Image (tube, rainbow, N blue to C red; front, side):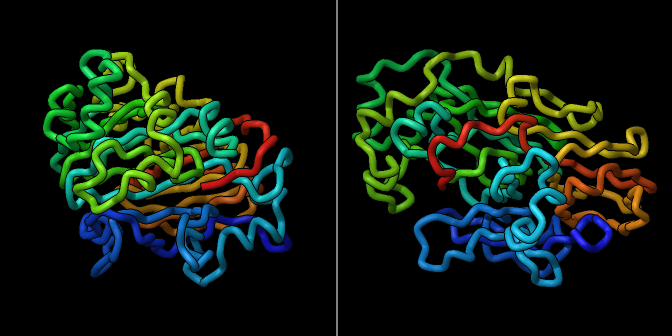
Length: 341
């Protein structure tokens, strides 16, 4: 990195996902409109199943893609132990304009065996809806295989939800979704999502979204796909932190998430952060200045998003902003197969 390392402001990055939404992202960002329910923030992951291989790749507000910047100087962007251009994380702003279907994501072990990828898809949410909302997380009791097969046949989403843990969430709540855990998000929920860098979803409730059975199972047999679901109930006890953001902990998600991604917060009471790799910053309220050891000070405002190279090293916040710092795990999975989405 020839220039002084600094945070780079990101342009909005919509992707053509199958459900509706977008106004909540526009309001959060302070822009007139947003054409998608998902904004892939700082992404170097390509959106799957499109002819345009630039879709999904985030760019700075000057037009440079983050992927190209990383390829030019991977050590400065990803840190001393970088490999290829793998950031190890995908961050999204998600605005559910409709209730999302009941679905789940595979573990890394399942993805290696069936999808030829070292990443599964653990994910975590920071709820940003001003008035909260509702999500469903895991089953209330372990469903029998015959029950899962029946839901797959009938596509009865109401019955699926009736057997799941319904959770009322408020602004600043933290939700960790382990891989294999069935979940759904209600209409009107806005959240910041951290996840492994794939788009692997098994969509049990798919016909209402005009999706055929094969694509809902990622092209593999449903008999195999159903083996990847997490049956154990009680997941909400270990995965929901009410008011987690308001308590401003240094680590936002439960320790079980550290294997997959990490998040911390900069606030006036926690104004300093030391970076150990590629970081994505999302300013969720207020405004201020991010100061760096290299003198590359950046003015930030609510709704802005930032790609921050590892070489920045340290951030100091001045002002009344709240900034979520999103990072990959400290150790990435072994690359015995190619990353994919």
